[in-house]
Length: 465
Ligand code: SF4
Image (cartoon, rainbow, N blue to C red):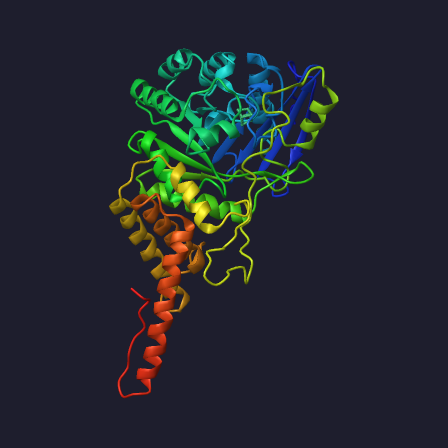
């Protein structure tokens, strides 16, 4: 076994996933702490992914990120390169290669991806330029991905780099479908709007002939078909590829976990994007539930930040409420009172179903005609019908993740949106009154049918139309 002598860091600690698909390293020195993550899918020689840090802490303050509360400093080129070197050396040790081979082996890996996707914002650290040029020289086949939350800074150095190095990719962390929501999620003030991000990505595409990606963390509050349509306004599916990330939630102990509900949300939102013509990949980093795959969420890093207040200065996000934490919807049984649309869901702040849907409908800026909404409702209705057929055992298919209830709720959302488009002045009280009249007629028709059934011949129920 060869030895790795650290030159630019004092110490490295290793945290291994129980399933051993992912290993996380924490590098420390007197004035900085960073994480690096190494993934194998399923073997190192088939696909190796390394996410390295570009900063210790981060000034962007993203409210879903363990790194976002503190900023220490930018990393030097050597501090970044040594993270990648160490991860590759570690992979080779696991492959039981000798010291002579480990520096050449990375070029034999079928798919090697090195990403600036751990701690820090790469567009705020121009040393990334030298790092990518060096990595390309060492590992010409490696895909190099720069993932940015889009601060409003000079992008020219990066576009020039991407023109010079053909393996450099660009990804924007979009994560919300409106600027208003994104401002809450990413409190850093000097950042690009969705429209400005789209323009930068288009410039990348024009100058490199490669497609940019946008990354979207699908949560409970931002994964409706309308969110997808709103993204489409700025991010043309002919230019953009989409990555939908499974949210890695901080639990009460500060650890990280993802769950099936989060995975389902990401899968469902991907379906909405696919319908709009996007190529979509779902990113569910291995190891989230065991060692904390989300950046900066390892207890060791969190502890270092707390122990070094003179080095780890609070960022613009410090103290602000965490945003995007998943909420499992709870619909209390028996919560629907006759004559009232009082279906409550966690996360709506106790608002009625009508208020919740109308609030979202008003937030969505994508221009849509009544015909557009009706056409979308027909699609949802088709999906509902399919679920009902599957549920009755008359189809070879398996039930979808949403099931009959989820699909029915999609139809309800479309219908409320349609009413809102048609007449924005109507209130919930107006709708309840209309529903009350229709229910009364429905009951009346049912009573009449029952009476007729006692006579020869059969009637059929209509819903007071
Ligand atoms: S998500 Fe990225 S840009 Fe945002 S605070 Fe975390 S490290 Fe910084």
